[in-house]
Length: 175
Image 1 (cartoon, rainbow, N blue to C red):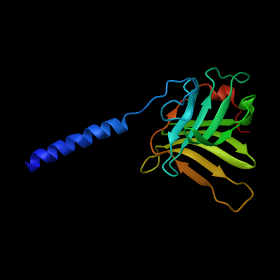
Image 2: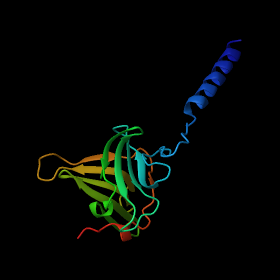
Image 3: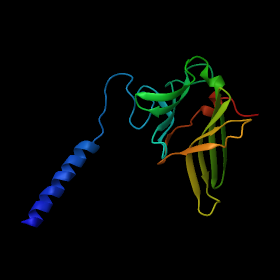
Image 4: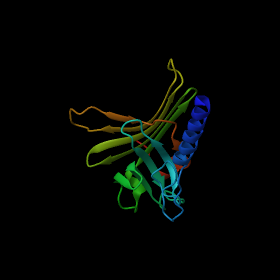
């Protein structure tokens, strides 16, 4: 009898878990895509859920993105509650970002950099295969140049959704 009750209880919890854990999708236009702060009609350049704080970081773009068409935006926060969106205006956004990519055997470093009110942001996707153990880290680093504040790094809780195709041709590169 106890065994049967435990089995029924376990099955009930399994069903409830499946209902609660099932993602709900909003089919309305402009709704965010799953696991990103980008809208469904936008291109996800980079997006992940951070370990701490439990928020998201996304770099979103228009479907068509060239050096003179479309837009690129950084977003930080939660769906429906974005705390930082840069730039606010979607005109000429490409000039406000820098893109760098370094690659060689066992090393792959990608950064999208920008500055807001004197604070430097770097969305990064780093793989260091030469390190023991190998290091693969993605997230956003924030620096306050000219102050005593130390760099803050928010690390992704899992591998991000990322698509850096064409960014080198679209964004300026550091000098």
